Image 1 (cartoon, rainbow, N blue to C red):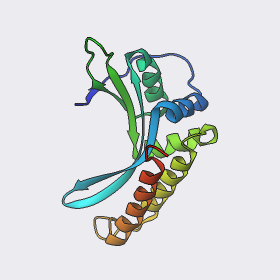
Image 2: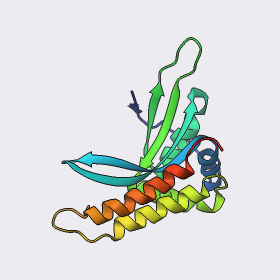
Image 3: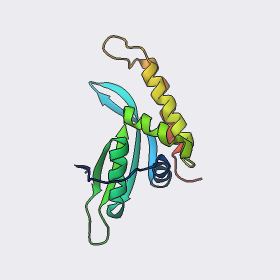
Image 4: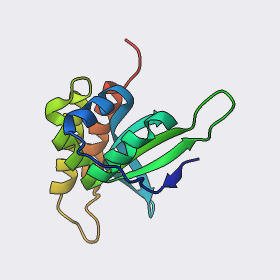
Length: 154
């Protein structure tokens, strides 16, 4: 169960290249799907996981780019606590744009996430929602491509 934590105070500038390295090594970029009011909706997300030793880095990324830091796992006799920095939507898009020039491993996922975000943002509203069946199908296809990029193994 994720437990939201308050940000620790950190000092110093955190370069986008550092964040890109963390995302490449210990993070993910994806397209998330939710159901609200019986309707499917999508957004983009960025997350980075670290053990308790890396918590300060996650807190600094939160301060620099927004989002939240959550505890993913409590410490045990054999493992340190595990933390994750997560952001979605507008904050994720801004972060991806800032780190894109420095990404090496996750660059294709970053481009696909930004394409999805642009698709979502440019959709006209129909009544109170912009989530038409056509938009859902379009973003669902991008999500399938993202899943293929994020697939483990050869």
